[in-house]
Amino acid sequence: MKYFQFLILILIVYSNNALAESYYVSKNNGSDKNSGLSWQEAWKTLIYAGNTAESGDVVNIRKSNENYRYLRVMNSGSEGYPIVFRGEDINNPPVLSGGMQLVSWENDNKNIWKHNFPSKLSVFLKKHHMFFEDGNLVKLASDQFLTDGQWYLKDNMLLYRPTEGTPTSHVVKVIVSGSGVMIHDKNWVEIDNIICNIGPGSCVSIKRGNYNKISNVVARWNWRGIDITDNSNGNTVVDSEFYFNREGLYIRNNSSFNSVFNCIAKYNGTLPLWKDNDRHAVAIGEDGPNIGNKVIGCEVAYNGGPPDNVALITFRGPDTIFENNNVHHNYGSGLFVTTDSDNTVVINNSVSSNGNKAVEKNIKGIAGLSIRNSKGVYVGGNRIVDNYVSNDSVYKNIYVGKHGGLDIEGAYRANMTGIILQDNLIKGTLGGPDLNISKRPKLDDIQIVNTPQLENVE
Image (cartoon, rainbow, N blue to C red):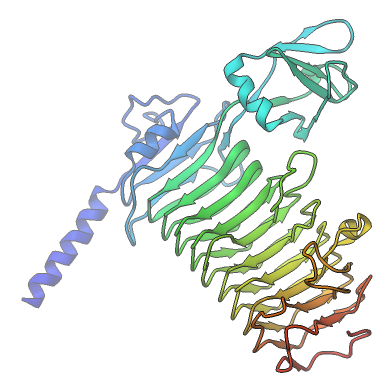
């Protein structure tokens, strides 16, 4: 009987392998009427590929002259047989974009150029203000009288004045639609080697999805680079980069045991485009608990803007691991473990030169590395150097006084027992002490082990 069961298992595995296909997508010369089984028979759209690919299939995507719009994955893979969507060339990945290049302009002889912009496309531009010249965001003018490097939309007529020269001497792009990859209610899907440029949503959105893998993805100018939300568990993000997004990566809303390795998050949340609050570079939070998530080996730098957004944060994220991250030169605070993020481990991170711009703007509550309203947190082997800190907080009568390079703070009745600080190098803090331990809640049991002599402690 056992032999018969084993034979059935072998036949199932063989059947899965035999049925798996390799498909090909090329927007340049493909057609969704093709078989998709070779480059000569390639499909044209990712939409069709997302509808068709099943467990074990691999979809190869070729970069094309015209960008792809979006990929919605309609089927799940299975353990050992994921559905894989992969850019063909690691050095020249396919691009998904909600942007369109504009090439047709009329001149009014005042170096203001005009482009007729249909009303259905104007909706995105009016809402998101994404107008780019040579990859740089162009400033929205307050009226139709433009100066160099400005644009304005008047009655569906797009007005543009280049920084120099004529529009034909620049690559001009504007947002016209949504874009990105959607993995909603799907499991065991892999996305590898793509770029997302310009989009009002997320480059990759995982919602109620489990055991998906995102690797070698670059996201620029999106609302979020990667969004893992709504009970999404066991997903992995590897070797991915996030630039100029409102937020680089967010794990939120009861999403647990997700892992992020070797990411780069730079220039996210910066003005003038992203003006709303909660513009973190890499964040775990919102409704929780978000249990057992990891961020390891990431560079988090030059992110943020007013009011006081933290570059790397866990909020309602118990058992988080922050390890070997380099958090530096961010607008506000560097790294926070806050609000019911119990038993979090923060080890071997470098947190340096953060908070300068926020302190210059007199923003309250800035610290280098901070533990707030959480218990059982272990902070070990971190380098916390040359951070700027400020006084008090935006909350009345909470976190009163100076903050520190390493800052241990809590609300009056918070349970912050069992905190261990070990082998941390803390020095060069500007505006406050290197180590600050608040007088409330009672923190008598905090353990400080083998920490080098500090220049100033409160």
